[in-house]
Image (cartoon, rainbow, N blue to C red; front, top):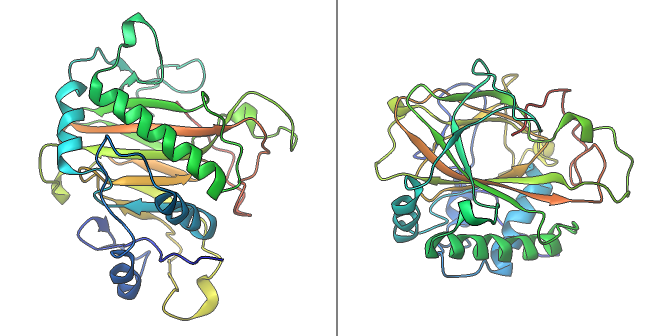
Length: 288
């Protein structure tokens, strides 16, 4: 079995100032040799999918700084604000709950006359599709083509999204190995920005991942968390975040406009529990 280094949790982009996480510098340095930046025109590689899959399997999330290069981020930002965004709601019926969520969205996975894609967006969709195909193999998941969801998300100053997970409640109790409506398995985010993120900007992604399998090994691979059990990820331009869709997370209030590509790889064969981790999430789901 091929073993890939863990995610490079450098303090410059992943906040760990609160008690809650102690990160391994050895893992950070070794991971730099594996991770690379992609352009929109490049397909995802199997090595990239394998690295992401290994982290999903062992830790349920992965953070990849500068996954897309600066030119690709700029190309997407050029078209980002040309679209007509709508207020984001909660659940399948997209109910407005401003006390829970304050953001706007534009669906890229819709394919009709009102959702025509630019060349950059077409390249993004093709890249995401190549990643889905390779992750399906790496994670041994049936991630079907055509079931991927993809959108732009914009958080205006003051925007936020309270703690939630991305799996709709009605999907949680379904039977194993049954052909059903597609259910979100892997959530992913690519941050877009034309400014250097600063801590005072806020807008971090806060996550409550389950403890990794190797947490009690007491060696260089150990990652310790306090009872707080959460981490904050800075929304730096080009960063890719992938995580198990059952993981609780929230978007902290932002003081500047926060832009991102958000998506979900879905499967029609599923159960209410995560595929690769025995963690059982609390009964909380807002989902979009």
